[in-house]
Every structure is written in C-alpha cells, then in structure tokens.
Image (tube, rainbow, N blue to C red; front, side, top):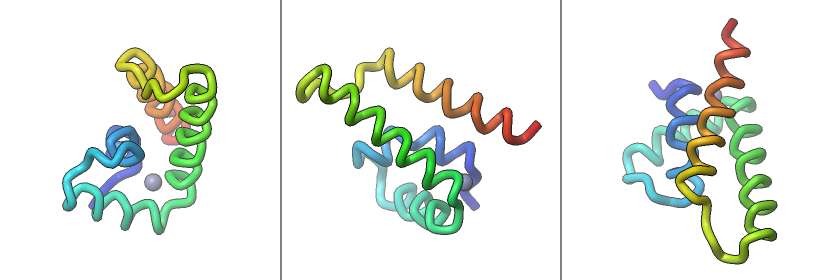
Length: 81
Ligand SMILES: [Zn+2]
C-alpha cells in the first residue's frame, strides 16, 4: 500500500512523468482514494504553472524541488500530529 508520505516523495516524478509503471500505478490508485493527495497534486501543479510563467520552459530546478518536497512533507507531518 502506498502511503500519503510516499505520494509526496514521488509527486515530482509523478507530475513530470518520470516514474516507472509500477510506481505510477500505485500512486494513481492512492490518489484516486485520497482527496488530500489530490489536493497536493493540484497545489504542486499550480506552483509549477506559476514558476513556469516566470521562467519559460525552465523546469523545476533541484533547489525548488527540494523546497517543495520539504514544504509538502511538513504539511503531512502537521496533519499527523
Ligand atoms: Zn494520500
């Protein structure tokens, strides 16, 4: 079973379609049943759109990836506690 945390950890790969088929399938199954993770994906896509407007066609830099991941993971940690 995929947990929310794993979705967050793989969200960048998910949106950028970098995941292998098995991981992708597992994540999509989880997303289907988890409104919170669906919201994460939407938020992340929004952020990508916003950064995309500032930097044309320059995809997320490793630095932004790291920050986003930390942000999302901290959100989930808050939910758990
Ligand atoms: Zn979830």
